[in-house]
Image (cartoon, rainbow, N blue to C red; front, side):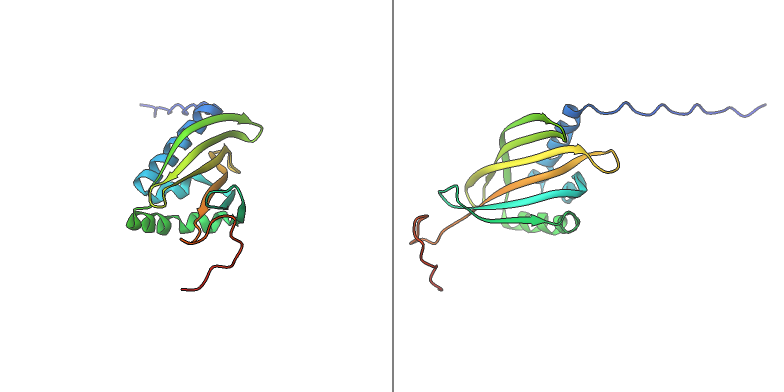
Length: 161
């Protein structure tokens, strides 16, 4: 009896940008909610990751930090573990999707339950080097709190404790 030749499986249909972005965004939110270290797998190895620090109560940018994607992916499990231990949970609301040449931009408001502030959060989901849909860009905003006797107009250096 001759051996049966197996039929070569058809390649899956390419995922459409909006569906791919929604899938990545959903996994991103769930990983944040559950402090899951697999969050790192959602980032392209060449992702542009930036953290923007603003003074509390203002739009003044006090720090703009570009994060190395390799280090970010490597640190993610530890960061998620630390966040879980501190109860540093983030939730996302008011999200929107917009098609851009690179893929899909997802904008949302991120709320930090530990620090009690909201700020804009932006991801770009697009095709990575290997053609897989991943996060290729992220801009996260954090609020730098001022000391108890200072406000955003106080230009004096903080006093050491």
